[in-house]
Image 1 (tube, rainbow, N blue to C red):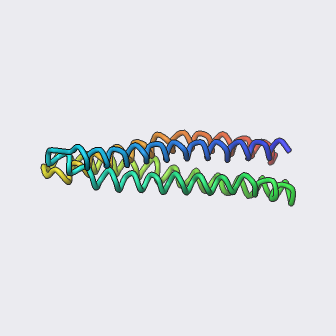
Image 2 (image 1 turned 45 degrees about the vertical axis):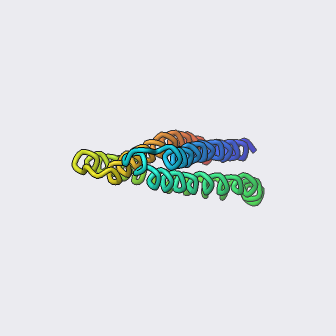
Image 3 (image 1 turned 135 degrees about the vertical axis):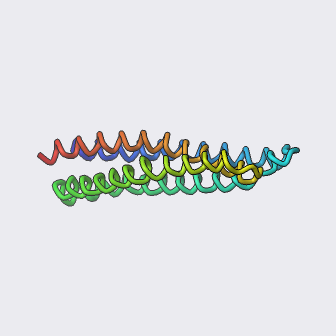
Amino acid sequence: MEILKLATEWARSEVFSARFFIFFAILFLTASIGFWQLGKTEMAKAYIIPTLVAGLLILAVGVGIFFANKSRITSFSEAYNESPTEFVRSEITRTEKSMGEYRTIVFKVIPFIIVAAALLLVFVDKPMWRATAITTIAMMAVILLVDSNANARIIEYRNQLELVDK
């Protein structure tokens, strides 16, 4: 029963983490509206679309994580009651897959995107491209910040699962 509590707490932490994505999405969307309403210069107007797109993308990620883990909380107890051993093994497999995705996407692809956007910022002088590069760096920084914490949480969760499995 301890493992069920651990799994539920992990899923609740993921739901809480999703709220940070939603919060940052609202900030990006608010910035887009601010640039649209108050932007007087060409550079300020160039931020309208990139911040809108970034806000919508981060919102989609946050809402997806929120609902996926909300439903997981209820399914955990059903799966655990069916077969505790199989539940632990399936969770270990799922966490290993997630950790592999974090290693690839969060710690390799996102830094590469940040570097590419920084290079674009240095070598391109058009306001729309500069705004896109800066917004991309900001969006990737948000994803890196939130997902690095989620990665640490899933590593700890997996370690606890392995202790139970033994």
